[in-house]
Length: 193
Length: 98
Image 1 (cartoon, each protein chain N blue to C red):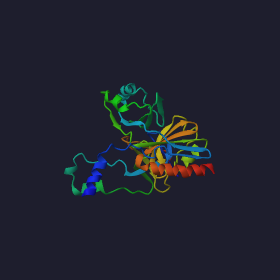
Image 2 (image 1 turned 135 degrees about the horizontal axis):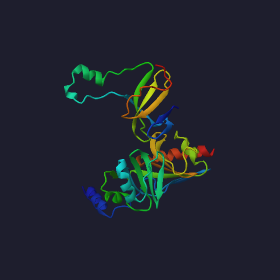
Image 3 (image 1 turned 90 degrees about the vertical axis):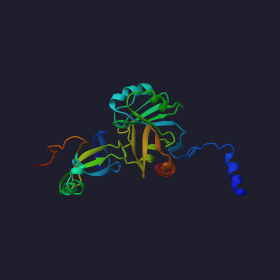
Image 4 (image 1 turned 120 degrees about the vertical axis):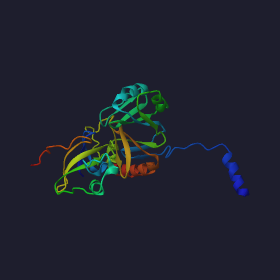
C-alpha cells in the first residue's frame, strides 16, 4: 500500500517533457544521410472539386490537382494523394486545421500531426537507398523535384516527397517509424557499397 | 513485377501498390431484403471465373487509394486496360478479337 501511495505522489509531480518518436536520430553513410525531421503540423484533407478554391485560399497554398504533384508556400506543403485527398504539412508552426475551420465549403480536415514521423533522406545515393524498398521509378524524369506520392517502403506505407534533386522526405506512421528508420539505415549502407 | 495503369494517377505503377477486389460490375439489388435466396446466392457467391478475359475491381491501395476497374486475361495475367470506377463495361476491349 505504502508503495502505491508513493508512486501516486511521483506521478503528480510536473510531467516529463514530451519526446517525439525517434527524436533527433541521424545516420550518415557514404552518399546518404538520414535524419528524423522535427515535428510539424499535418492535416489530412478531403474535399470535392467545388471546395478546392476556397480551401486553397484559406490555407494560403494552392492545392495541386495533378497526380503525383505537390505545392509549397511559406513553410506549408500540400501533397496530392488522391483525386480528392491531400496531405498538408506545415513546418512554420502555424495550424492548418484552424485555417480550414474558417472555410464553410464542404470538406473534411483531420489533424494528424502526431500520427506521422518524417525522415529526410539526402545525398547523391538517396534515391537508390529508397529504391531498395520502394518499387517506384525515382529517376528525375518520372519523379521530379516536388513530386509526391503515397507508396510503399518494404512492408509499410509511406508518403514520399522529393524536396530536391538529391533529397526526399519520407512520411510514415509513428508506430512504423522505427521500422522505416532501420530499413533506411540498412538501405543507406547498401546504397553506399 | 507487373506494372498496372491507375486511371486516377494516370500512370503505370508497380503491382505492389495494388490490391485485387474481386469481380467488377456486380450490382447489388436495390431491394436486397426482397431478394429470393437463389438470387442472393447468385449475387453474393457465384462468380464467373472465366478462362480468358475477366473484368475485375482493383484498388490502388498504397497510392491514391481509389477503386477502379481492370480488364485482365486470366491465362496470360496481362492487364488489357483499366478504367475508372462507375464507368460502363467497355464494349470493345483493345487487342482482343470478338
